Image (cartoon, rainbow, N blue to C red; front, side):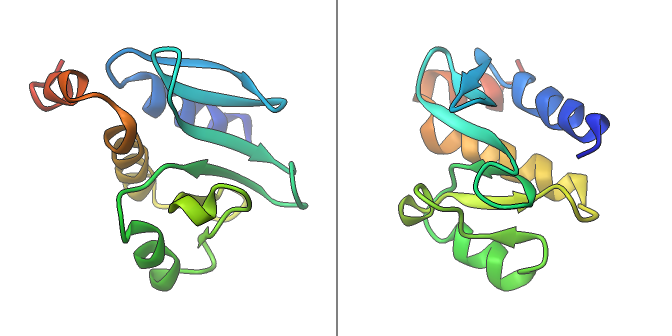
Length: 121
């Protein structure tokens, strides 16, 4: 994985209100405050691919995977809860990645923080 891709992902995640980063299961992961988690890196964690996993609103996982299974997938463990996997070892549209990260945050953040996000804070 390119270090620049991790930095882009990190920047997107940490730009959200009260988002934090810490290591979870040996990988960088992003949380709303101390919990809940909304995204996690998967650097060859379960296979030979580099990706990140993100929480998603209902139906989004299926939509992204159907749209482009070469870029998106159902991740192990959390895929059954609707999370989306995003490959980082293929060319990505970073506008799509930004949308997925924001949707992940919105899927788990409390209403007060979502209101701050909507207000542009």
